Image 1 (tube, rainbow, N blue to C red):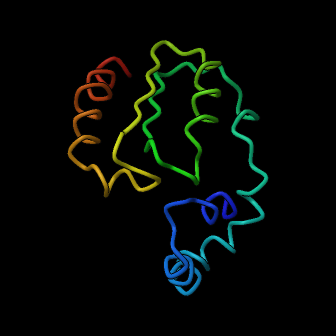
Image 2 (tube, rainbow, N blue to C red):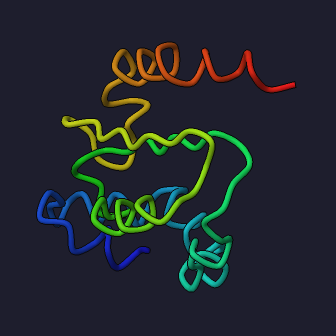
Image 3 (cartoon, one colour):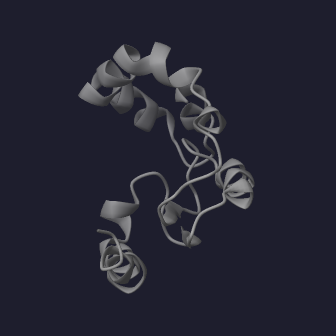
Length: 115
């Protein structure tokens, strides 16, 4: 995960230095063992609840190609893949309006059917 982030063509040397000196680097180092070998496919593909994957198109931490490949195998009562065009890994901050729109338009109506 850290490697994918660091090889992003969007990062500059000063970005990497800032990352290494910040809390996110310490956080990543602590979680490294758990997250680096994690494979979402081990959770399976069959879900009894609606599945919406929302991610940034320029995300190097969670690559879109791999997320789409996983999504194509998902079996769920409802599924949707939303790619935010102007975001990377922090879509919540890069496109808050678009993210809110997806949540209200796609996720909120589904919550009425969950009991």
